[in-house]
Length: 124
Image (tube, rainbow, N blue to C red; front, side):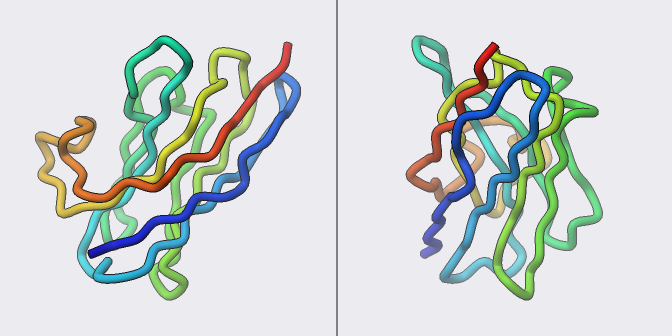
């Protein structure tokens, strides 16, 4: 079992930055971790993923160049640095973890564990 707790959400003006953190506990060795988000009335969507060693990262075009995912395995923590935020980035952000395959890396059902979510609001 893996438990995930997100922090760092809040309200920021457009163009600003936020850094989300996700503290993991339990059996995280070898797992990939990532972030999804869900805006009101929309489906949950992939935001970023990182492999266990941190050597590979993945982003959709909507956040590429603005968001950066990283992890510190010694602290069992994954981070999401979000820069140049836009109102359309407003959503609840969820941390995920799992032994995900390459084909399922951007899929909601690719991950076994989910955090409770943290709200990010970007005002215009």
